[in-house]
Amino acid sequence: MNLDVRPGTIDPSTSIYVYELPVRLWHWLNAMCIVILAVTGYFIGNPLPTLGGGEASDHFLMGYIRFAHFATAYVFAIIWIARIYWGFMGNHHARQIFFIPFWRRDYWSELFFELRWYFFLEKEPKKYVGHNPLAQFFMFFSITLMTFFMICTGFALYGEGMGIGSWQATLFGWVYDIFPNTMELHTWHRLGMWVYVVFIIVHVYAAIREDIMSRQSLISTMISGERMFKDNRD
Image 1 (cartoon, rainbow, N blue to C red):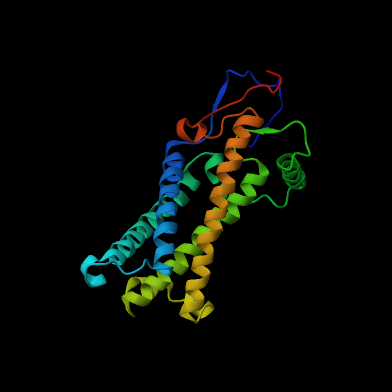
Image 2: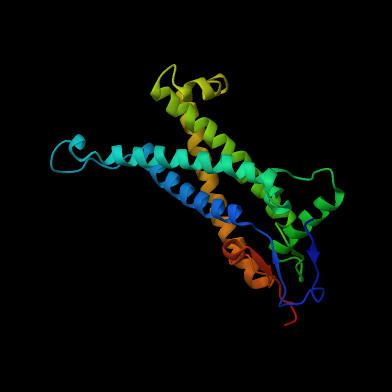
């Protein structure tokens, strides 16, 4: 259960074990993969100028960038499969990013409270053991759904290069039934990259802000797994 912890209801020295080791490993590996994929993907769409000193093929720079992108994409997909597995095997908090309890009225009430808190319209924050409702909402759409989208579109594009009969084309060829034009698929895949970039900026800001303003550990929690709370009156 995602508990709302009110000031004064918990000993500030108390820590609660929230994120298990597999979740924390996935979080940091996933972050690393997204950064590498975003940087290399950007240059694949906007290649660097031709290097001096002979033919571009002599340097193979774009070849290395493409290799880094494709290799990281495999890691990205494999750890996502592992993350789905741990969503079934782990604790409640390991499953939060995979669903939104849209049927619960209190969920939406708390989500809009968090929106007001982030817009500085609330004076006192609510504290949650796991993701707060707003974070859960954005994690579901910006990580869970977007990861599926990027894996499917990315491997569909890769399968086109590998050719008919490759496992990539066999498993992800259906994507071209939705995006029959390759350039259109490239555009949507690239748009997904910018969704990730915007999400990372907001995610880092929100984590630092909550660490300071709501007096609860967020960044260190994803390292140790333990969440600590401090009364706002301290």
